[in-house]
Image (cartoon, rainbow, N blue to C red; front, top):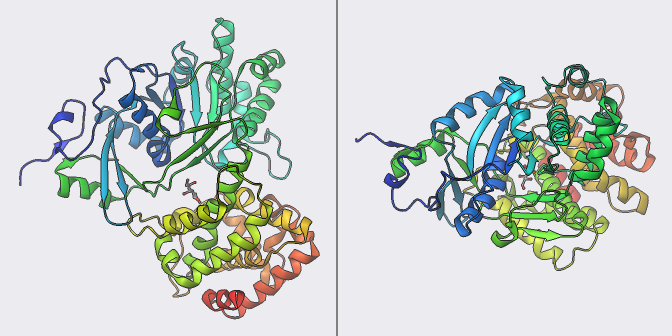
Length: 495
Ligand code: CS2
């Protein structure tokens, strides 16, 4: 077999003809965007939209420079550098069609933990006009229970004491914004691309809380000058596997060490509040709206919550992927019941969106058998996901006398999952969660106090204090612990 071609700029024209690739000239691109958190999602979403834009218009200002702040980013930084920051996006349709495109919008990468000052300089450079973030739901340093910036985090204390060697993204942003202010440069926009209700407003609050502690004048400047658009982001993007790498090498004859797979569906709804210009992403499918709230709520509470609604019981049953869960008629009916009776009644109307059609589409997307989205990806970090995706639905239903059964069932199964840490067949579950020990301990307390798990305040807030919810939850816990065949209880719920 002939040696396969390695993906890089020089080899771009030697790739098999069926692979789409940038036809624009990458050499003159400037990094108008600095992005923190270059995981699969950034590469299938913002970098994809930006690549489409570069392909369709002559806009050399909007290349992307990636930033890694964690030691764990080092491997991928090396791979990207080796490939001239090119990578393949493998879009998998439900009917088996696969579209492959090499994405060219990423043009540089810097590692903060090696050289924090270089990252600060990059953000402070005149060509940088947007700093965007995918730092995960748990990355915003919110103090559990209070919603304030968590100054008790030792990394935050470190950043206050060493403003030019920050660890947290907030330290980087304020250091770079200070340099811009001092040099008379316009501020950049900070664009959050994480799944959080009002992600822009939350980012603004955290940046301002931190900056105020450091320098109140700087904080006022940031408050007046920096745009923090809220945005709803959407594209299901599983974790890259060796099989994806092998597919490109064996089927298409080229070597990409870090491709990314995703579904064909893609959505980005953004508030038009940019402080220093922005790409015309609307020309390639993004929507700019005055208020993103209803879109965010719809997506977080139907899609993201829906994922957990399938994923946690799915993990207990022993399903590997979300598609397997969605293909199980019982799981699909339970998800639909959750969406119709619990999530939808507390959603706002979204102009121009038919919620029933949106939910039908979700079931189809989840069922795409070619997107192998593992339940382990969905279950990871549930302690920072469910407070955003699910708890507000429960709280609002409790205020309005709405339905809470499916949600109570989900939390009871999560308790069982955290307690036993094995699936129904005895296979160990790999739990990846910053609070995994706390979750385990609280769940193990169930034998003495049935509300023990629900009393974990950083995750559930005051839910255990609500009699109606507590009663429903305890009834589910009793049933799940009596017979951990969660499908049986699911069937009862649907009867
Ligand atoms: C998922 C999201 O992490 C999760 O639990 O629900 O990553 C989801 O796949 C994306 O938000 C889709 O846009």
